[in-house]
Image 1: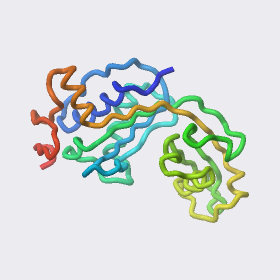
Image 2: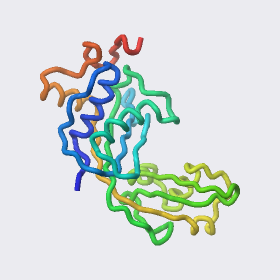
Image 3: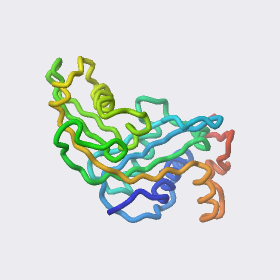
Image 4: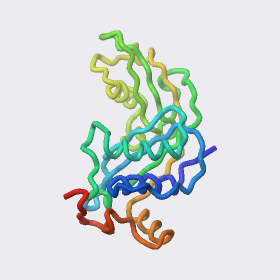
Length: 219
């Protein structure tokens, strides 16, 4: 089984940096495989708790090299909940890569464990007779401090359902649970790693990426 690791996070940072340089990222230092995966970007400013800046992935198995290449940029630049990440934000980012495993159909909407399982819910919106679905990665309910019911209800809202949520509707949900391995890397650790391996710190258009840096890419 492929597990999330440091090299995957490095490759996501490399991909984002290369995007702003108009270059190709360095070749990945992890083996190919096929798995569902997600890339999450968070931003830390003034020592505050990291805040989400983008999180997009796929629940279907993908070649993980092309998958991380695609979703590193998609989550950074095209998460509709947030403005695109700018080059000047890179020094304040942390990247979490998730590789999803062990998909199982749950017996009912409470047949899962907070902190262990991610969830995919699917249901028919009774008001519009349309199918809706949404997912949370395993760490989301635990991080938010939600109960199982709060998680389910939040997922239904995430899926776009605005009607009344009651126990009858919850029991009609199709719930798929899954697990994941994840690896989180802050920019400072990425820069240190790159300098030790490649002999130079990450740069955009020849300018080293440090706190407060400016380049032509974001003028």
